[in-house]
Length: 59
Image 1 (cartoon, rainbow, N blue to C red):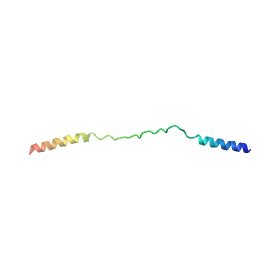
Image 2: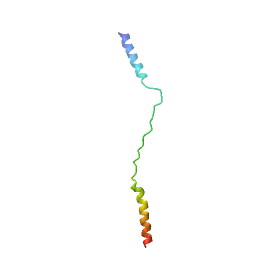
Image 3: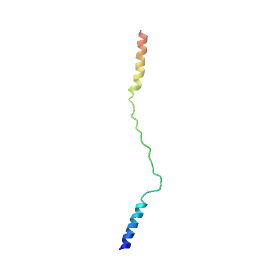
Image 4: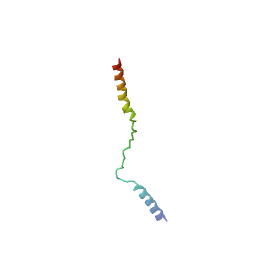
């Protein structure tokens, strides 16, 4: 009976000791998601520039 308990204890210790891996852990890069800007922002600046130029020429 003592040999059976000793064998069970050694088996449990051996399986717990070899549970880890010696290989390097794989670390994945974080995924960065950028939201797209609206296309009206790209059109707004030239329109404002045209309005300013037209106002300057009107004076």
